[in-house]
Image (cartoon, rainbow, N blue to C red):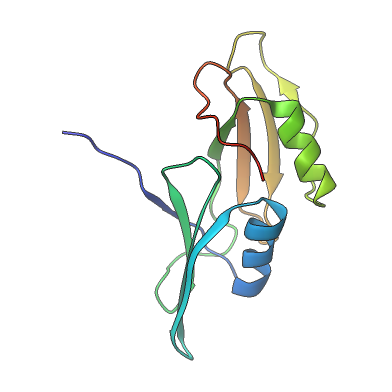
Length: 132
């Protein structure tokens, strides 16, 4: 039996600001942005090449904005990914090389609420999806 990870909940304080950050600055695809009533809205976005999406919302999604820490994305070219993030105005740290093995290099950034993300370079396992 496969156990697939499909969705990660990202708690945010401002849905429109978060949508701009994740869609425009990170290049995630907006799968849906649905408003049910004035107190209920849910958005799902998916990173390029990923089978796992993120969900944010009002009235449905629980969690303290900024509480998500350590979610990791994987790319095949960390220098290219970092350059794209910088070009789009994302405050991202320098490349950290923990060792010379494939998988030993990272960059880190936070969203506007302080949710923390890591991007790991794994050339051998990358899905081929490109940062848009």
